Length: 537
Ligand SMILES: NC(=O)c1ccc[n+]([C@@H]2O[C@H](COP(=O)([O-])OP(=O)(O)OC[C@H]3O[C@@H](n4cnc5c(N)ncnc54)[C@H](O)[C@@H]3O)[C@@H](O)[C@H]2O)c1
Image (cartoon, rainbow, N blue to C red; front, side, top):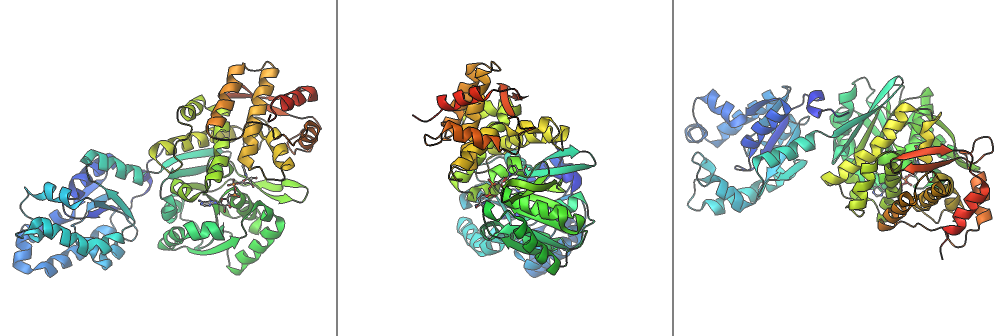
């Protein structure tokens, strides 16, 4: 399910940037694509004054023209569904930038030579009336650099066609929006680069019925890297966010930490209409989600995952929990978020090993329900982690597998347990390594064991297991059971797995790529055989 941002957000899109950057021509194409009205501010001023801009400069002077620009910024900022091309100098004036504080402003950039080439045949450029226009362009650009730097979004148009630039803007403006529908709620999932700076806007899109007081729950590390744009964006929408930082690590995903958060929420005077924003990896998502499910008998939750694992897995589906001394995630709830906002550019700061860990879950989703995703990864197993268009595509594909399963089985009464593929083995490896193995590494070995167990059970052909093992190896994930872990220790660690039902071990096993079964009747001998066979040499 996709949806366009423009359909939901009437706020103006404003294009600014130096003369010749393409504001007018690109603006027209973008307006067409978004079915919006296009306004060229220079043209409306010319019409109002009854003369072309060089004549306005000549007759009334630049200050007069700038004053007219300010009036038009004021008028247009409150009109819905517009794409506005401003004159190159309009947003140099800070008051005009403030007038457009709610708009989505994009500054189009281009190299000076390219600007000169685009403009050299055009008359009507009073600011370039000089014996050395090239030098004049460089000087004017330098004079405006600081003002343009205040604009949040920049797009380099050098060497690009109008159509290409327009496409890029539409992509910026239209985050991929998918949604998970469970009984009584539909949770929109926004995926795209730079969305943390647009949280306020995205929340307003979904409903306006929230208290201004809200809380962002995160940790100090993620906060330092990513919280500022979130705060700014929320404040622009009249929210009053408090930032609550908790210590970083699974060790603190506990009831005790939840209690300290309740104290801070009470101090910040949140009420039943408040939102809790969970910004971070799965630990934050689970803990802040648990708090949102229980504080004042439940307040709204917005998941803002910043790790790959949290984007493709933990933030979707509404399972929230804290750990108990006797096991992980033993105290929890189902709490569907009001929205999920996955800013893929946050992945740029994620340490390599965390990306790795997330990749195991991405592969898992391919095996469970999307052979094309699996094949995409086979073709390019080391595709860049930073948000390129391709990456975004596979992130949304990986999310979609979970979304589809959660929509069919929101309370994990059946099919949803397919998402545990590789985890019965994986949890045992994680535990026996004393958590030295990353979760994703343990899952990776678990996926390989599950695949070969499926072959042994005659559930799938060996080629399936070989492809799974080869892909994980190509991603640099481990595929062999650690030498030091004895088979007995692994079997007994599995026997304490929370996912066991009525004392029996339950496995999720691949039948083919993109298709898995839940299997209850596996003998311990078969499991032992696989562990022995897959151990490191
Ligand atoms: N609820 C669910 O359905 C579900 C599903 C899967 C996993 N989980 C839970 O998720 C947790 C694991 O999540 P995780 O793998 O995201 O680990 P995590 O939350 O511990 O995050 C990993 C590390 O990355 C840091 N980090 C996060 N975002 C960053 C960024 N953008 N840049 C730099 N550093 C960043 C964190 O501070 C942390 O140190 C576990 O507690 C697991 O139980 C829940």
